[in-house]
Length: 390
Ligand SMILES: Cc1ncc(COP(=O)(O)O)c(C=O)c1O
Image 1 (tube, rainbow, N blue to C red):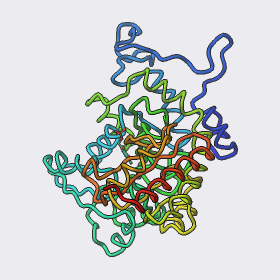
Image 2: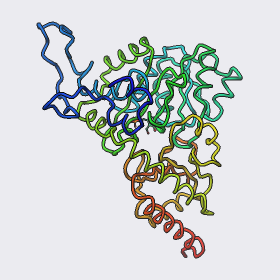
Image 3: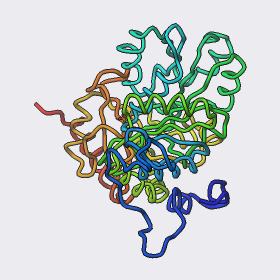
Image 4: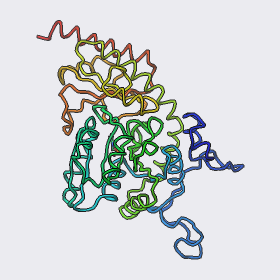
C-alpha cells in the first residue's frame, strides 16, 4: 500500500478495504486465498535461503498480508496472534521479566487479571492494578514509578471508562516505563494509540475488528524494532501464531469494519438514549454521550464512536425478564459482532459489577427495529413491576 494509504489522506472505508492489498496481478484474486502449509520448500535445501518462508510457526504469507493491513491501520509493525489473550500474553512475557513490575487495569478484561494472578506472579513478576479512570492521577502521584510496563485499556471493558493516552504515555516515559494500550473496544479506526505516544498496541480482533463472531484472533503493533523482536520471538517459540484460514477470514472481514462500526455506533447512540430514559435502568454508559463521564476525553482522543453500551438493571431477574420480552437482544458474551448481544457480566464472576449490570454490544440490525424491540421489552418490564407475579 502507498504511503498515502497509511496516512489519513484516505477515509476509513478506503483504508480498510485496501489495507494489506498487494499490487494487482492480472489473473490473480483481489484477496489471495489462505496458504495452508506447515513447512515450505527450502531454496537450496537451506533454511532461509532465498528469503522464502521456511516453517509456518514463524511466518506465513496469509498472516503477513493481514499483519501488513493491521500495521497500516495502527501506524506501526504488527504481529497477529491466535487470540487476544495470546497477544496480551506475548506483551507481558515478551516485555516484563521476573522481579519487574507490571501495572494493569483493575477494571479491564478480567482474564488479563486472572493471567496475572495465576501465572505472571508465579514467574516472579510483581503485579499492581489501578482503575482506568484514575491511572493518570496515580502516576502523577508517583505511585507506580517502578513499573516496567503499564497496560491500560481504554475504553475499558466492561465499564467503558477512559484515560488520556497521550498524557499517560508522557508520564510513563518520564519514569522509564513502557506503555501498552489494549485497543480492542475502539479498534484501529476508533483510536491510534501509537500516534498518541504509546509503545505498544494490543487487541482482541475476535471483537469488532473481525466482527462476525466466528473466530478468535489478536494482534500487537509497535514501532520500535527491539520490541518487535522481543514479541515476535515469544510468538515464534510458544507457537501462538494464528492459522491461515482464521487469518484470511479476519482479513476479509476487516474490509467492512468502517460500515459495521458506523451502524453499531448509530445503534449504540439510539439504545443508550432509550435505556437512559427508562426509570428501571441506572448508570447508562456510552463514551460518546455528552453526559457520560468518559465523554470529555473520548470525544477528544477517539476518532469515532463504537457500539458497546453498558447499563445497570435492578436485578438479575429484571435482566432475564427483559431478555424474555425482547426478540433482538441475544444473550452472549464477547462484543463487536453483527448481532446485538447482551452479557450480564456478574454471571461469569471476575468483574466487580452489580448483579443487574449488562454490557450490550450493538450489532448491525436496523436502528428502528432495535429501538422498537428494546422499547417494547422495557415496557414489559414496567408492566410486570406494576403487577408483580403472585
Ligand atoms: C478488552 C479485551 N482484551 C482482550 C481480550 C481477550 O481476547 P480473546 O478472547 O480474543 O482472547 C478481550 C476478550 O473479551 C477483551 O475484551
